[in-house]
Length: 217
Image 1 (cartoon, rainbow, N blue to C red):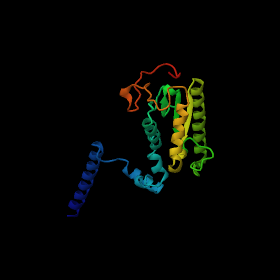
Image 2 (image 1 turned 180 degrees about the vertical axis):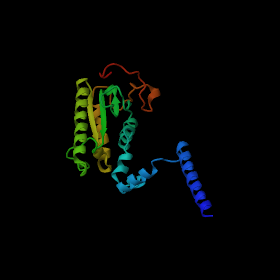
Image 3 (image 1 turned 90 degrees about the vertical axis):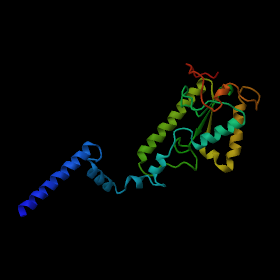
């Protein structure tokens, strides 16, 4: 009877190994599951914990490259005031957030952190991984300066609107000033709807065919 029991145990172990092998082959089992568990344990936090609200990982995972809240805010205001524009136009350095051809003006709407807004209470350098962040933010500011210089050299008027300038207490004043800055440039009379952008594109999407120049048209 003991021999029979030993044989049954061996058969059960063999069946278990075959089942696990079949699961891996069919993609229903992760062959590195044990390794993954050890990796998670060594870091002390699960994936869910790393991306919980309030952590840096959570913040970084929710950052958008375009159509951010402040960009939409500025565009909505300009559109309501009768100005028409292109957005994120890839023909120009930096893919400007707002391009107003008739006014020869480009507007960048910058987050204070990513563009390292100097003398700004909303900007503070991370306390961890200092070398990485210092180098990254320096590259960002140098890139901004280079792109702005290229646009100015091509005849554009470049305006930067900062995230901190759009805080509720000062928002209306900054947006009104932006409108005045734009319409002070050579163009039509203030308040006249800009018809440079075809009517079918008044959802603010670029419709013109790319040209080979950065010159204002």
